[in-house]
Image 1 (cartoon, rainbow, N blue to C red):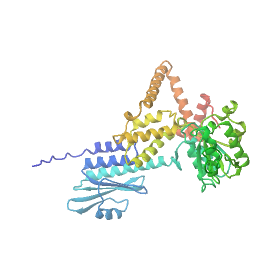
Image 2 (tube, rainbow, N blue to C red):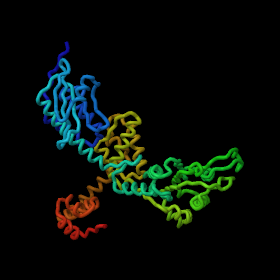
Image 3 (cartoon, one colour):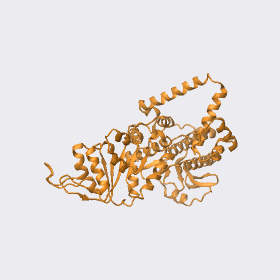
Image 4 (cartoon, one colour):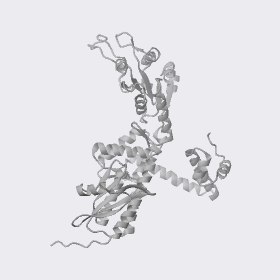
Amino acid sequence: MKVLEEKKPFNALSLLSRIASIISSRESFDNIIKQLVFTLESELDLKNTHIKILNYSRKFYSGPEDERRKSIESGFKLPAEDIVDIGPGRKLLVVPIRFEGRDLGYISSMAEAVSDDIMKVLRVFGIMLGMSFFLIGREKTEIRRVGEIVYRSKKMEEVIKEALKVSESDATVLIMGESGVGKELIAELIHKNSQRKDKPLVKVNSASIPETLLESELFGYRKGAFTGATFDKKGKFELADGGTIFLDEIGDMPLHLQAKILRVLQSKEIEPVGGQPKKIDVRIIAATNRNLEELVKQEKFREDLYYRLFVIPIYVPPLRERKEDIYILVEYFIERFNTKYKKAVSISKSAMQILENYDWPGNVRELENLIERLVLTSSDLVITAESIPQHIKKVRAQLEQREEEAVVLSTSRSLETIVEDIEKKAIMDVISQTKNLSEAAKKLGITRRQLEWRIKKYKIQIQK
């Protein structure tokens, strides 16, 4: 005979503390919900918990659908709560998810028995979940997504604005920035928002094609132009006729081909190998990770072509200069690769902090490749600090060591000087993130006059 242990009564305070800890974790909202459902069911002896957030693309289930239950839920009118008998020993508990008087959704669970304590916990849980979703939603309003570009930083916002503005014209664009920052995505954005969007966007990486083949790849050739040319072949420029050609890594293009690119810009015509000149209508967007101005001085890049390309320059900043984008990029890539590989991996707070403190010399491309590898190789549901490669963690360790050294050095100074340095840095940080001094003073919790006095005291230079 199987002996059933009597289930111990739950501790409401302990349970709510665990719920608060889960909600405050820095994981994706979907994973937070999954953990909350598991905790509720295991602690309160509930089954088949459903959580529905209004105007949210997903409904979270922990059990199978039930037609009788579905009809009850569909008729549920917020802000009511209810306990419905739906069969022998089966009760349906429905509690609203609410925050600041707004009804955001509901929680429903199956139970054999219901107590006042269980309903009280569910009510508080609904409020906590509502607060969490409201705050997450407010944070997400700061996240921008244009095409495949995800960002939150002001620097990237300026890049996007510039790209969308130049897309309205047919002007030549030069996109500059380190490898992996997303120059190709900016080129795609310009093309897709231009009048040429229904025509081809042809991409050419000058560095990846052997110099001996680059001319024929760009301009094509005619039958009999050289041994093996048994038919006419269109080049990339001709294939892009009416549309846009993206010349990536143009700083690596040989000088004799730079002259031919210049001819396209000047006369709008190409000359296939072994053929006659031909008029084309194509917009050129070029990109480089090299300093073209320096290459011009070294006579490795044509000065006339440089000025032809430099009509509208767009500089894409490296990831280390816009670290506020790292968190949302990590979440974006995790979601994408979870979908691709049918996984449900999230990331721990400690692992995220390591990634945010790393400088990413390979920029967004390096981050994307790492996240794909971590999602693929993760045996657990959570990417932990131990999962992060050693060379990235090493940077974090060095940073912590420098912080410790700074603390040791500070002990030789007076307390007043240390406090002044902290206050000056706080003021400079807030000013850099706000539009004017009134807003900065409000964030700092002081009056504008007090802020102006401190700016004068610490000789802080403000860029207008």
